[in-house]
Image 1: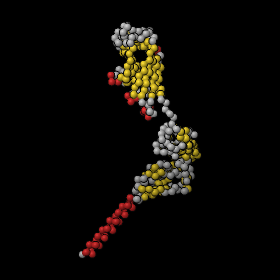
Image 2: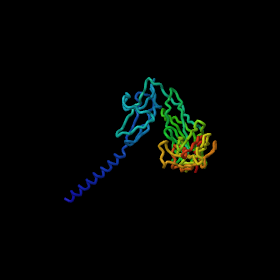
Image 3: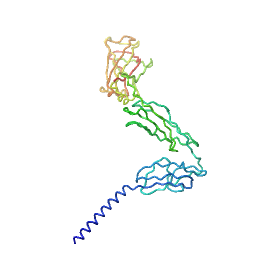
Image 4: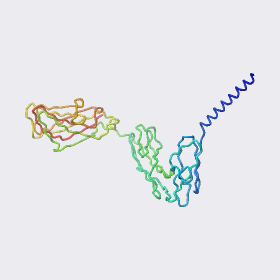
Length: 342
């Protein structure tokens, strides 16, 4: 009885061990993607191995040829009625071995790639800045101009987008970076350019980011306690200014009074900057206000300067002109300037 028990235990241990080994082998099983010339001549590309679900780059058909036909990709069957996979595209490895057949387009001209040219050819890009690159594929029978972009030599944070926009990290330590453009028609054809990485330019402590001059057509009258609004719009990027270290804006309004003036000696003229669109302006939106007492003289020029925190600023401003009761002014706005400061 004891012998039988020991025998059963040993058998169970062996079975469990075999199961675990089988599971490990299943997890690590690699499947083959092989290629068939499908009537073409030449050398078939080497097979690809990978685990199920992995993405593999499909080879081109440059080593194959067919009389009077052009290579058109790879297909699951020989007559090309299934999905056609382009050379240079990604193929997902299946849970079984796969054979892909060459597709031949009998009426299509043979497309040949001679070279790939990258522009600009000798660029210098500052740390923290970006540079747009372009590439031209030269060849026979109008090869597609689609490009695969890559870089080498850059550190963390330096990258290039799928459409060729290179961004240099602010802390990039490499002195140069190689940009490579590869033709999707023939992945063996590439062009390169060497980018010189230069130090970032110092940001000026004061930067004029908005200026608008006016003429007489912007003159208007305000009378008897009324108010008038002038809308200012701007398209500068607040985020870029913040990242550059700017913390506040200085708004400068320069104006003069025309030949229409006060009714009462004690009248006042007010100018204030607001954010938001007129006329839906509330008290909480006002940045600052200034009044002039006693009344301004005819044709007298004045300047109104208001400093505000950059975090409080929106991309739209309104100047509100107003008067005290029984006052009358004709105001001409000369210019509005917005400067960013550290």
